[in-house]
Length: 598
Image (tube, rainbow, N blue to C red):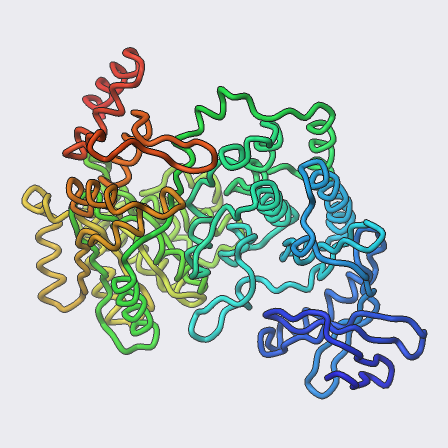
C-alpha cells in the first residue's frame, strides 16, 4: 500500500500501526496539502453490512468537533479497499506512554471524559475504548481516536466462533451482542483506570472467551489491594464503573469527570486498616482450570446439533459437589451467548419449590426480553398459558386474556404446547440453550416437561439444547431425576460428561491463578494431599489459611512459614467451619437458624 494514492487524493507514505481491523498509515492530502492518517480497514472482518455501517458512522463522526477527539475527514472505498481519513496526531498512545503517577492518570482521564461526553451527546458511542485509542500528542494534549469505528462483538466472530479484536475492556452487555449505550464506554473507562492505576488488567486469559466470562461473572481484585497508594474514593469509582449492570454505573462521562475532580481535591492513600481487610480479596477467582477436554466435547456436540448432524439434545454434566460443574457450564453459556444463542438459566434448590420453578425462571427471561424489545409475536393463548407459571408478568401484557379452563390433563398438554411454541418462535432467530443447574433437585413436573422438549426438538429439528448439571452422590434421593435420566439414555437423547477432580498439575495451575504467582512444591503437595484436587475444597483451604494468617501478603507478594507449621484442614466441612468460627457469635446464631429454616 505504501506509495499508493487513494481516490487520486490521499497518498500513503508510511505505516504507523496495525491491528485486528486494519492498518494505520501516515499520508498526505494532495488536495489540501496537509499530513493525514489513513486507516485501511480489513473488509473481511466487517462484511457487507459492517462496511455500510462504517460509512454511516464515519459521516456522523466527521461532524464531531472537540479538542479531545481526533477529527475524521473522509471515508471511501476503492478496489475493495475501505479507508478512513483522519487528522494526524503526532505523539504516542496511552498504552505506549502511560502516566507516571495517579495525578497524571486522573488528569488524562478527565480529558477522556470530556471527549466521551461530547460524543455521547451527539449520539456516538466509541465501543472500543482502550489505552491504544487514547493519543497523547507532543504538546501533551489528549485525543480519542477510532470513535465509533469499532465493530460490535457480533462482527468480531469468525465462522469458527473465534473473537477478533480486544476483549479486555469490553462491557458485559457488549460482549453478549446486546444493544449498548454510553455506559458501555464508561465500563471500558473503568477497566482502563484499573489497569493504569494497578499496572494489571482486572481480567486476563489466553482465550478471549475466558476473559468475557470474567467480565460477566467475576468480581475483580480491589485496586487498593494491588496498589495501596490509590485513594479509596478512586477505587470505589473504578469498581462502580466496572459494575456488571449498566444501571449500576455512573450515568454519564461528565458525572465521572466531576467525581474525579472531587476525589483529587484531597487525595490520600487508602487507610492501613482497609489494606489489612483486603488480604482475602487479593486471591484471583473466576478462572476455570483443567476442563479443556470437556469444553471441547460440549462445543463439538453443540456444533453437531446446529449443523443437523446430531440428535442428542441433552448435555449432562455430572460430578461430586465442588468439582466445578457450574463454573464449566458458565464458560459454555458465555461461549454460545457470544455466538448469538438465546441462553436461559433455571436453578433448582434442595428445598421443594413450586412446580415448574426452574422453567418459570426461564420463561420470565423470555417475557422480559419481549418487553425490552417491544416485540410480541407470540400468540395470546401462548402468553396466557405462560402466565400460569409467571403470574407477576401478566400486568406487562394487559391485552392478554386468560385461557378457558380445561381438565387437569388437557391443561398440562396445553402448557406443554405453549412452552414448545415459545421455543419454536425463539429458534427462528437463534439457537437455544436451556440450562438447569442442580437438576437432581428438580421437581417431577419440570423434568417431564424438559423431557417433552428434548423429544419434540429432535422430532421437529429445532436447534435447542438442554444442559443439566447434577450430583451423582445424590441420585438415590432424586427419584424423578433418576427416572428421566433412564428415559434420556434409552432414547439416545443425551450425552454425559463426568467431571473428575483436578490432577496435581491442574491443582498447581489453580493455586498459581489464585495467588497470581508461582507455587512452591511443598505447598502444592500439602494442599493436594488433603483436597485430592477438588476445586471447591482447594479454594476453601486457601481462604482458611489466609484468614488464619498462615499465608499472608506483604511487600507485594505472598509469604508463609515452613510447611510443617501449617495445618491443612482435612475436609471441606472443617475448612468452612474454621472460617465460620471467626464470625461474631450473633452472626453464627443467625446462620444456624437460616440453615434450619432454609
